[in-house]
Image (cartoon, rainbow, N blue to C red; front, side, top):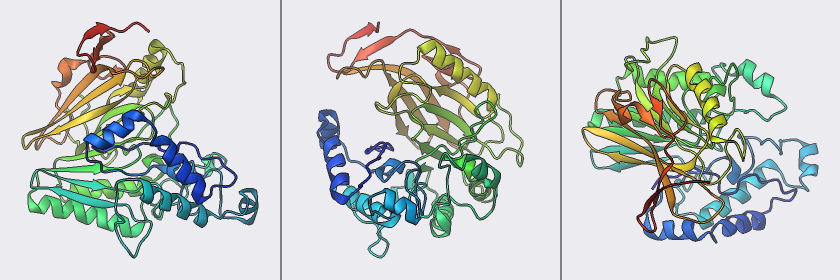
Amino acid sequence: MLLCRDYTRKQKSNHPSLYDYRKRIAQYRTDLDLYASHQQFPWIPVWDDHEVADNTWKAGSAHLNNSEDSFLAAGGISVDQRKMNAVRAYFEWMPIRQVDMDDNLRIWRSFRFGDLFDLVMLDTRQYDRSVTDLYWNTHYVGEVSDEASRSLMGPRQEQWFYRTLRESSRRGTAWRVVGNQIIFSRMDEAGSFNYDSWDGYLANRNRTFANLYEHKINNTVFLAGDSHASWVSDLVWLGEHEYDAATGAGSVGVEFAGSAVSSPSPVGQNVSLATANSYSAVLVGSNRELQWQDLYYRGYFELSIGYDALNASFFGVPSTKTRNGYEISLTNFTVLAGENRLHRSVANAQAESGSLKGGKILGSNLTHDTASGEWFVFKG
């Protein structure tokens, strides 16, 4: 099981000590469903920003910057000390071993599953990330977003990432699955961009695209989280390569980004399905490579990987107000080996909610109770 989610959510304590981080992760460990998941499945975890603080980068975060004023306001906790506290607590509680004994912050690593797929786990949040959007510097980060010196990973991790993809392709491994915390694809949100994602690090994204296109690396699938919404896109280097949104020609891979388990939608805690879907329609209309988007449902997706095809099945939870086993099948996607794009007969061009390019939205609310096995129409 691969999950990318915020375990500590928004850490705003003025005294983020080692004890504070230990207590917060321990609190999450009291969730019975999370407990059961750890009992039944192997985990390959990766942290997001909130394991340390909101919108982290290599020298600070949205609420703690590398300055004397910030140090005093945090009760005498420096950026480095806070990060060290968070990382130590994480390694104490999570099912992960230290990757590099000479590099305490390193979490980026890779796994080989025979010749079927290689799983490449990145750290696009904590390791050596250039300054991100800290809310008060949004305009500045937007202005410098295309500077070549900016990196989400730092030069050491970047070169390791590109080399790992090339070596995997040369070995003849069927698929390359890249787990990272934030959305890789361009996301034009009606004329604005989220500079805390890859849209704030355009040169780094272009270097990644160049590695994929120039070395003819096929069957690459990016996985992402963080946004509390679901996104499915062809991966294409716009402006450098021709792309046909109707057929997917010109794409070099695919991205699947999952929603949150319980955290609210980015358009509001109590947004209606109709309102959420109207926002999704705007997003799908503004991004040629974005094929499906859903803002309403909390949930998850499953990958099924074979030598000839990779399938992604998205599920939504109709209500998070109570503990239940309800889920709704939202849509399914297929990537055929060698096509490097979403297969266009996907889901018979239909989805339960959100907005699907060239398809229709059902809105059936047909719900499966995974505890009892019963099917019913959910009525909130």
